[in-house]
Image 1: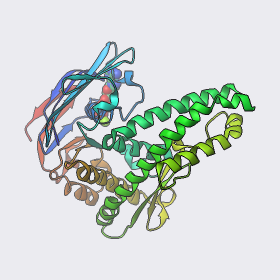
Image 2 (image 1 turned 180 degrees about the horizontal axis):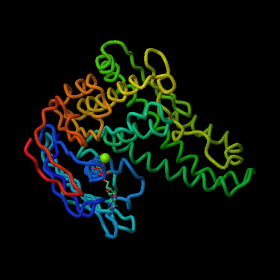
Image 3 (image 1 turned 60 degrees about the vertical axis):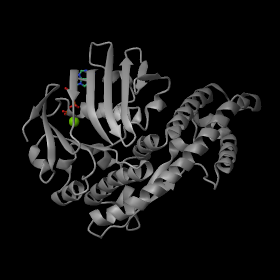
Image 4 (image 1 turned 90 degrees about the horizontal axis):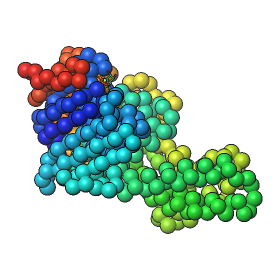
Length: 368
Ligand SMILES: Nc1ncnc2c1ncn2[C@@H]1O[C@H](COP(=O)(O)OP(=O)(O)O)[C@@H](O)[C@H]1O
Ligand SMILES: [Mg+2]
């Protein structure tokens, strides 16, 4: 797929902007804090239903304004797709897909698909499990919108259950009030687990090959799903075991006032040549691995939907050494790419189709 245009109104520091990227590589170049990442954030919002930088929608509204608006128009094999999101100070979202208003934010997923690679992703391997879960959530939500809904329902139930845990004390009757939340967590949690397992296995089929290639044949990558609850062969069995575990742990959950087990505690194991990369990887290995994971996301989406997503590279070129940069650039053909950078020299090797300079939220087309 490719994006034809991006329209912003009162989004972050933009009063108004209209950008038409080319089908190949488009570059947004400029000094820090001018508005480069903001453009990618707006695209990412239309791809995944959320910002990659904040869980608080209102932060995206330009200071002093009532509402922000983003429209991304793209073309897929089956025709035009358009996603519009307006966010008000009241926290309300109005979403349109192909011109028609939709009720749930999950309905915007799968129309504009994208993979964002930013410096934070380089830390994903060594940071805590939350970062690795975020990586999985972003991609899987685009691939399978029902995953997004399950995650939403799970998080809501978890919040309710944790609130209740703070209010009640140990005792049979009080514990009954946990029943509906335990059922909801087991139901949505088991669905999330099976989709995560599917995703990680699938991702590995690409990542192991790509990582070997990017590392020049020296590093063998393995990914494993490390669920907090027990994963059984079919969702129904997983659900029953999950529910049993929640009930069993009630007493300790009430004492700790929080839900101790479940998909909010999942992790993804990353191993390089058999060693746990979360603890032992060198900086170089971490970079190769993060790059391989991102490139694998593209291949997985390409295989799953028949077309490549848009690739957004936020200031990562400067983080990669010349060899890894070369590895990245050689895989960009056939993938619409939007790159932000402060120094154009970092782009050496990329075949730039369109270039914009970004200064104080104004995008100016430049001759390449
Ligand atoms: N809600 C907002 N309203 C107005 N300006 C904002 C808002 N959020 C961020 N900004 C401004 O956006 C700029 C950062 O934009 P960003 O795209 O991250 O910069 P960069 O070009 O370094 O990627 C900063 O100047 C910041 O003050
Ligand atoms: Mg930036």
